[in-house]
Image (cartoon, rainbow, N blue to C red; front, side, top):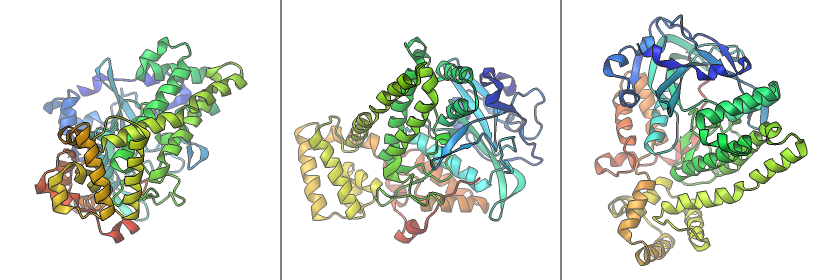
Length: 480
């Protein structure tokens, strides 16, 4: 049976880090979407996949299961609070190989002691959205949680109105967050913090065990991994929408896809989240928030950086002090690849800045502008250019022809510039139709976004941005 293969290494941590809890049992669970390909990648056979309801303990909770909810804290919009998995239950760890261990967490799996008055449930639309966007991010080669399925519970969920309920089995290398370390520092002992640090290193970064100061090495490694992740978000125009410390994983995987969205018309202040009224997590702020979050991790790790607090603070500040230069290098390396360029110098970085400024002023589509540069057929069909842009493009083309060559540059660009992203209006249409019983738009959109880097003219309509008024009024929600 699938269940017998699950492991529970997280339960070796001190018990303040979790609550043992069984997921809710739903009387009429129904698989709405099944990620068959992911099942195959995990080594789950077709016959085993048929047992998924039992595997996820929805219809008949397994009395021998060791399922649990994780405790954590976090800064939400800059304010510290006690949190925890209020509607997520860890089913266990799927071990594909010793090097490949994944959490399987049931989102919308019922109330826990961390629910803070919530019902522990999730809506069908919100879970469909997470499935769709997480699969898009995976196809875009961005580290992300994965979704095994969307399962309707057969029950109703009360939010601003009544919705169908659903659960989403989510897969990640680990659900340990910056907020988990904040929890250990604020509500545990130094021994608890040390145990969490040791476990995180053993599970995610075992090479760091040999470091002179493993906690310091962990801080530095996570910072660099988070920088790379956020630069990749910027590469494809992704706005996470809720970069609270409880949503930033130590494994540097993107997760929690409630208020997220992809930018259409380029504007650095773009924000779609309904709860981000001041633009804290706007597109342009994601690097600064990444640094802010890493600083919170450094604060949590202080007792392990040095026994003397002043020296520990100095060590942490030295690491955080390297953030800006690492970010600049990673960001421009990432953005120059979008232009087919593999080298970095100040002049070339200025080209990126000039192009983005022009795109903002002329209200150009972020995805399509880069796609048109590397795909003449797409450009000829769709892209209207100003004289200013043509002049910039001619200078860029001359540089490319004199250095790497256009054919090589186009290959680099195709690997870094998606032709297809989950456009907000297409996502909303697909979700609404799915809820009404028409799965075709959802299935079609999934098909398109699973091969995002190859422009296929038959899917040309999926490159069209929405009407301006749609983006002005479009809001995303947490789905809690």
